[in-house]
Every structure is written in C-alpha cells, then in structure tokens.
View (cartoon, rainbow, N blue to C red):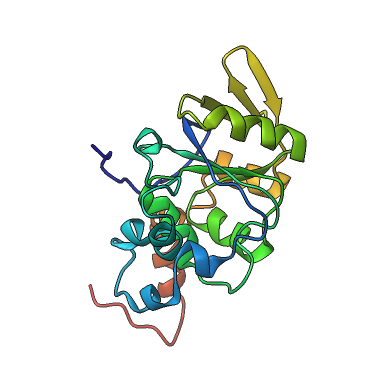
Length: 204
C-alpha cells in the first residue's frame, strides 16, 4: 500500500528511505512526464502518470512498477538526468510518486533548480559509485540515510560522500527553499511594507 503523499515544508536536514534505480543517461523530462499531462489543473494526479509511456512499453517491468520498489523515496540515476524541456511537472510528478531525493552522476540545470524549488535535494556522485548503488538497489533492499549538513549517505556501515551545491545545501538547512513558508513567516513585515506603499490601500 502506497504511503500518503505529504508536501515537504521548512528545513530539510535528512532524507532516508528505500532506493529505486533507474538506469540510463539523458533521461529527459518528456519521458519523466509526457507532454499530454501538462494540461492538468494541479499536480496532484501526476504521480500516477510518471514515466507513463516508458512503463507501458515495458509492460509492468519498469522500475516504477516493480512491487519491491513501491514506497521507495530515493531515486538513483545516471548522467544528465532531467534534460530536455524545462517543465516543472517533471519533478512534481516524481515527488508525488514518492521521491524525496535524487542521487545521480549529473543533472540538467533547470531540472535541478525545479527540484530544489519544491524540496527535492539532488546530489551527485561518481559514476562507479552510482553503478554500485544501482546494483544494490535492484532487489529493493537498499536503504540509505542522507545527512544534508555533512552531505553523506549512509548505507549500513558504508558511508558515501555526496556532492551538493553549497547554495542548495544552505537553502535546505535553513528552509529558504520553501518560498511559501518563508513568505508566511514574514507576514507582519510584508504587511508593514504594504502599509507604506502609497499605491496600496489595506482594508482593516
């Protein structure tokens, strides 16, 4: 049974969970979420449509369909993941399927930024280490915990030093990635600023 989806909020200090491996370079956003799903009114239903066409082609054998991968939270990918069009629906679909963090060889820049904006940390790791983790994840028995402050993934007694942009790390540790929560926490300051703007009249 799939876990109930919860949108991340505020500070993100650690991410832990089962890993799911998706092997292949240059997996683009059109494969992650096909263009026909971009007309959705909200993002809530996108989790069921993630990798829709790839999953149909593999007839139940796609990693996102395998029973032992259900409720996985950490996605393992290869190079240039999320390339192609800049659609924000791609990370939204992954998040609503259950992905809370991604570890890969490299990411397309806009996809990376879109992930950070919704609270999905994207870490990089050397090719040989990624392949080793992907092999371990093939049975659905790979669980890791990621310490964002120290940028370390712990797999049993093994530790992997990950890479994460310093600016992104600081955003997760302080909660500044979460624009909505940051806005609400400064509501009084916003209201005072509005009161001093001659072209805005507040009704009280």
